[in-house]
Length: 117
Image (cartoon, rainbow, N blue to C red; front, side, top):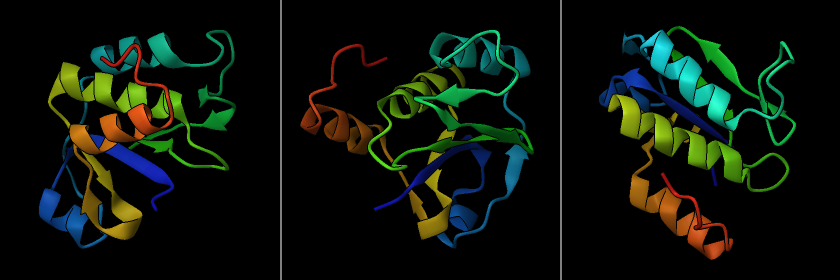
């Protein structure tokens, strides 16, 4: 089970090897718009999803997926970001690419399939 999702224009081969290599940064305007749709508190300097911090660095985003429970907001966010930018979603720590179907299945199993992007 992975604990973080990384979304960005990243090299899929390197991601499968557990390495992060950004090919191009995410569009900052699109990223800001999608983050604002999902963040816990729009006035806080720290961006969080369900009180878990989001990391934006090197032109990609690292989201809490399971910390200490399923973070539904993170999943919906990365799916929306992928739809808006065509970015890759990866589990860098465990060397895998995560598909829309994988995430949709998790949301369905958890009863949170409504509002899928």
